[in-house]
Length: 248
Image (cartoon, rainbow, N blue to C red; front, side, top):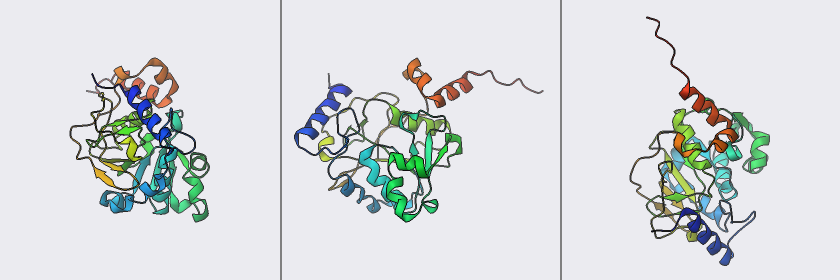
């Protein structure tokens, strides 16, 4: 039996803390902010996939703030998930053409995104070209473990449900080298694999294999999570509603 997801998270958090590479607001219980996150983000322009992307969906966690800043500074339109998907309009649109240059840095933070962005329902979002995901642990096959809330998986699944995310969309993450593990990572049907891992020193192409989830998997959701995330109730209610009778 391999390590469980929680055991792997604890191992990574301890390693980051032991090496003194953790930055505010910390590692444990989070997508860990790490020393070198800004340097890792600077490697993104080397990727053709990044250069071509206009519409980018990004996680709201601290270690990916430099990625969000780079996206906005490069004229890309950013869609940041509302933390914990707690609103029905669960994404914030940040259009750099509507944000002054002096405010771009602030807009790349969670608080700044709410100040300068526009809340959107998933059905209002165009086709996403690239996804930035936060990670606690990854391996070179593209397997990924988040902080345990399942929100990144839900964001991806929401994208598939509303047609704004295709199965082959490019997904990348930025991590500290200590977060890259030389072992298989446990995966479930709602997990997605990533295409690129960026550290402060290298870009790793995972050449991932296998498909990705097609949408929301009802059996993987608790009633508590459904009640806490309004958009889930909307989707599940629509799926359970009886079809309209034929007009013939």
